[in-house]
Length: 206
Image (cartoon, rainbow, N blue to C red; front, side, top):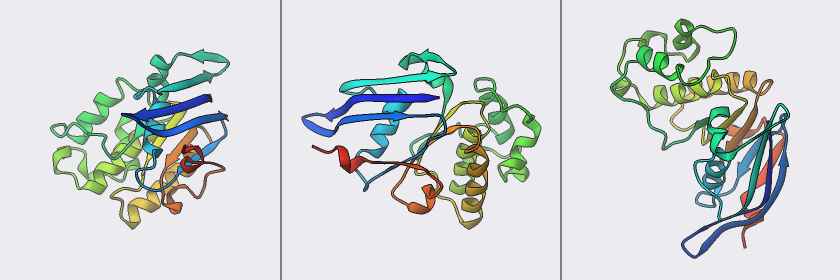
């Protein structure tokens, strides 16, 4: 996956959140989007995901030499964000079976082993509404890590993770970095210290 941002800008009401973002991002770029809370990090991530339109400029996508239209980019991404909801009335097993009807599972894995990979093996038949916040976050991250998509967008990925969950996140993201393009939106260095490319949103304020 390659992504090009050309003069990208976003305005809410009469206020410019950021302007004049010009970037070329390539397959092996592991990018951290950094800046203080409320600075526009999540807004940029939503625009890259195709769920929010830019006010000005263009975002172009290419995968394996093929240009991808913005309205089709959802097929190529996995997104994790604090506001992302899970179907509370599904059991873990039901949700995993449902989710991977729409997102292809990474080659080499089978659905039955997924709960163990998420550190949720004992919760296979538990309803998601009864999960702790940390369990829900591991589930969100896990379905992103194990989907066969070339681009992963992570907004505050360590939200609600305890020490064991955070260690799991670092181990799993280490595997993902070898295969996918990754964005991490955060103001916590320990969430993105493995990144090799950095976008400071404050550099694009007017």
